[in-house]
Length: 153
Image 1: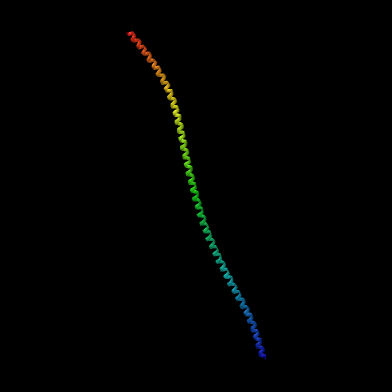
Image 2: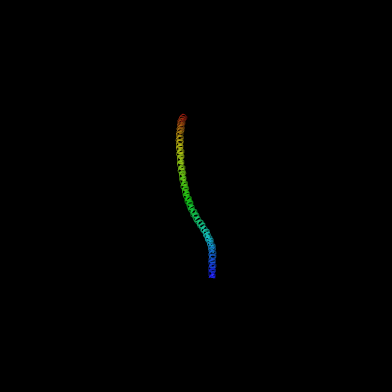
């Protein structure tokens, strides 16, 4: 009986130590499991950050390309409008210049014609007066000639 009690007490002691070892083993395994879990979480967090950074770069690239395309389109439209406006303005200036040139030329021509007409009228009057003076002189000479002929006869 003593031996049974001893064996029983040894069994209790062993069970107690096995329980302590089991508890230590479980604590160690829990710690390992926790470390693996933390490591996995850390890896997943890093992968997620990499994925997020990659997606952000892709979105940034897409937005940059879209913005560049829009800016090029806007610049092309602005250039087209500027070219059209410049061409229209050049045409308007050319038309205004031609119109002004024609008007000035007509004014100069009209002024020159008026001056020429006035000078022509003055010259005609002077010529008529000179012609009348010479006609009178010719008449006087003709009368003298007639008188001289009469005297000679």
